Image 1 (cartoon, one colour):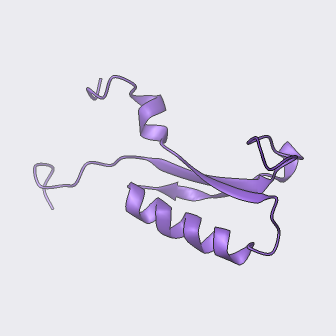
Image 2 (spheres, rainbow, N blue to C red):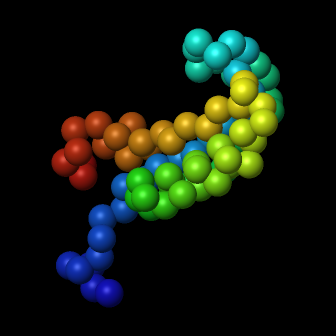
Length: 80
């Protein structure tokens, strides 16, 4: 692929861990937060999120999140 035909990379991170309470995204122990991975687009991140969420379905306090890191890196969305 040439630079002109490449799909733009939109970095997404998937993290998760056990929450203190079900009503707020506050982790019980930050040292145990799991970094699932970094993904080039939302679709790939969602696949990883879904796999980890399903693997921990027996623990109601476990939650996984998709972070749209590309928005933090480039909040204006203009590539600069």
